Image 1: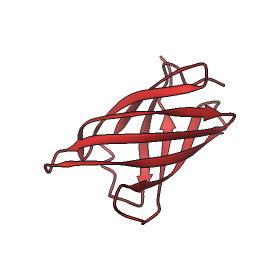
Image 2: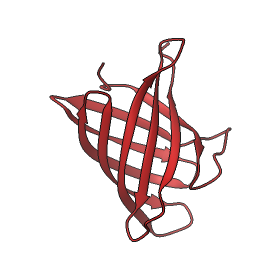
Image 3: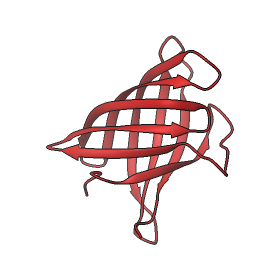
Amino acid sequence: MNLNGRTFVMVSSTASAVDQDSPTSFQYWEADGVVWGSYTGDTVIHGRFVGTRDGDVVAISYAHALKAGGTAGGQSTSRIETEQDGRLRLVEEFRFDGDDTLHVSVCTEVAQA
């Protein structure tokens, strides 16, 4: 399993409502256990992340610019799961810097054309 070149969209989050017409989209890259990428959509103008993958666990730090103004950042740990149709799903637990509230989001892989 490798995340390189895969795109995921957010389907649920305890941190905010997900706009089903324009969900946040995440582009992942991976090499030698290092994971990085970018994201945009919903409430985010532009976001970046970097971290590592060990088996089916991805640990990252992230930062993004908010459409409402300002920035946010934090850390997350995602568990990689496989959907019945073979696409990957990320179940992520995350915290924003300066806030101890644990949030959970679910992202599913966009099917390759």
